[in-house]
Image (cartoon, rainbow over all chains, first blue to last red; front, side, top):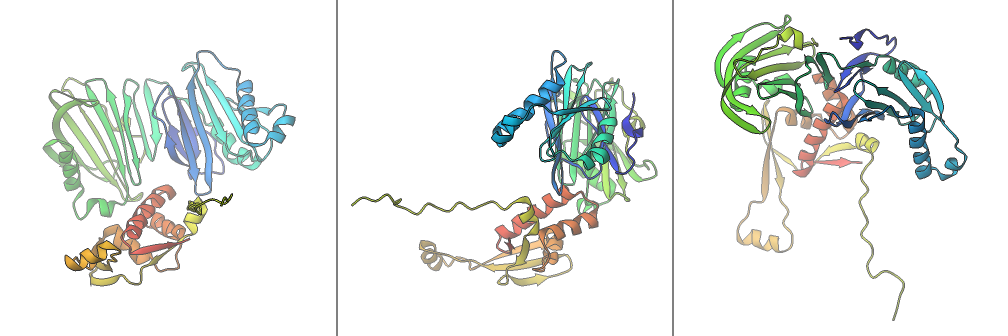
Length: 298
Length: 128
């Protein structure tokens, strides 16, 4: 599957963003402050300490919409609401093509939009930036649009809140919890398997004097696991622990009959001051994923 | 007698400080909070309780406690030490970001959470 990690981004440090059907490289300082988990329709909002930087929305459309008309309509409605005087004289946006995106803007004080129809997913992707800014367009937005890749391979890329993983497309996002310095993503592969990813910050306080193994055991036991075996094992040169355990089979909110076999790996990235963990738990017949195939970061 | 004036002065709605005003706010320690016990790991502070109206009468009859104790440790203690009456909320956020390699919004959420807790307990006030 093509990955956006090689796209040119000359001036700005970037980070990957991969969600249901798309992948981008976004500026490093942009943080996701609002998100929708629905695959059909939703949005992500990006902020920095200076305020809202952008909003990315996705929406299923049966047919390819007239993108210019859609952007123009949005702009007219906005002017009608906020600047009736400008609305009277406004005719249409100025359109340009950058990468796969059609970009439309009017004046500096007004929003800039960029849209793309993903034919395979039958989905309209739309970026909205609060104010058109030619400098930001060149340094931030154009590289962003050019970094776009669809996310429709057999392995789906998920990169958000500092986690960056590749998992089979059969797994569906079940839960996302993005608390400060405590991120969790859970995916379910039918009634057979569940994958959980964690990223914690402020490790000294999190560990509270416990070793990594003790902390992880406590964490898993707190979630209902029965520990079978604990092994110290380095992960990509970092201090790590692998724990085999079993727990009551569960799918969504339902408890199932029998117990599932699980394996959890935790590692401490001292350079980043973050602790990461990945658990896969499922029926004995379910095929396990290779940790190195799944984890894209560190 | 008729009047076109309103009977009551309308209650002034408190304006929520803007994002930038929140960042520029300066947390100040409550001077009346007294240190009861201090170690490297924790700090126990006491704040006098103020009873008003009927509560005052009942507190005397029931001999209610006149002081409430709060123990700070971990991040809340670290935060409390950083509050010196001159550092702004933004400076506290930057300090935490740097120390723990957090992002701006992670640090902001944690600082706000701790400040709210300290304000609620009367240990700190925010000067906007």
